[in-house]
Image 1: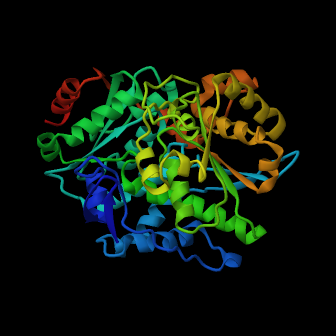
Image 2: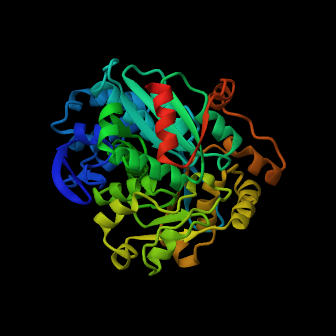
Image 3: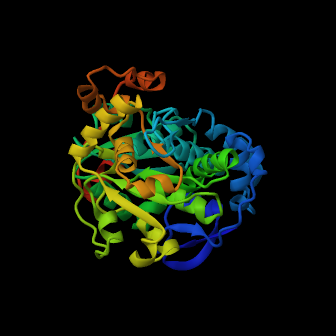
Length: 435
C-alpha cells in the first residue's frame, strides 16, 4: 500500500508517512486507494482485535510493520470500548464509550497506536525522533502518556495557556524528561501554526527529526477508524441495519476516521458532526466559503478550532461543499445548550457527560422526528466527565468519581515552560531542553 499527499507529489510507504507526519508539500497523507475491507461474517463478529486485524491488514501491506501488526493491535486495544444502550422516548440510540484508556479520552487509541508503530520503526537513542503535538486539550496528554519514557522518542506538547481545564493542563505537563510541555500565550490555532511552521523548516526538521502526533498523522486516523468499523459491524450483526454516527469534532480527525471507515465499505449510515460555537464546518456545509478564522473559547475546549486541519482530507475524498453536504451534516451547539444538555443527560439518560459528548447528545435529542426514526444512532462519547469537573459538577449537583487512571496522573508533579506564540520562542525552548 502506498500513500499520497492531498496536494499531489510522489507516493510514499506507510513507514515513511508515519515518520514524516506531514507531506513535504504541506499536504496530508491518504491511502493511494481505499481497499475493500473484508470482515468476518456479520453474524460472527469477534472482538475488536479481530476487526482491527481485518481492517488494517491491507493498509500495512508492504510495510516493515506488517509482521508486527498483531502486537501493535494488542498494545493499542488493551482497554474496553463498550457500546451501551441509551434509554430513548423514541428511536434507538447507543453510546460508544471511548474514554476508558490511560488518559480517559478517545485520543488514547490513536496515540497508543502511533507510539507502538514508531517505537518499532525508530529506536535510535543517539538521534531520537521528536514528536510535535499541538493540542486543544486531550491529544497532548494522550500522546505524552503514550511516548513517555520510550527510547529514541521525544515529545513537544504545545497547548493554549489558560484555555484547557485544570485537569487537562496537569495531564499535559506531568511526564518524564523526554517530554517538553509548552504553555503558549495564544489559541490552539497558534499552537498548530507553530507545529506546521516547524515541520516546514527543513533545517530544524533535519536537526530534531520532527514528526507529528496530531491527527494530521495517518497513524492517528487508521486506528480511530477501527472503533467505527467494529461498532457498526456489531450493530449490523444484531439488527441488520447500518447505524448513523453523531461525532463531536474540532480538528476533524475523529470525524474523518468515521468517514474513512464508511468509504472503506463499513455499514455506516448518516454521519453528523457535532461542533461547538466554532462554526466554520457547519457554515461551510451550509454554503459559506471555507474561511479559517480565530477560534472561540467554549466549554467544549478540546473542540475550539478555527482552522480544522483534516478538512483538507475530507474535501479531498468527499468533494467541495455542495458534494460534501450530501455525505455529512454538521450542527453547531452553543455553550448555553451544552450546559442545558449536561443536565438533561444526567436527569433523563442517567448519563454523566463531558461538554464534548453533550454536543452530540444535544444534536441527537434535537433531530427532527424523521431523522431520529430513520435509522438507529450511535453517539460518540469522547472524554470522561471527571476531566471537566469544574463545568459538570455544578450543573449536575454531584461530585464525579475520578477514574483510577486519571487519579494516578493527577498525583504526578507538573512542569511546563510558558512561551509566546512565536517560532522564535518555540526554538529557544526546544534548544534549552534538547540542545
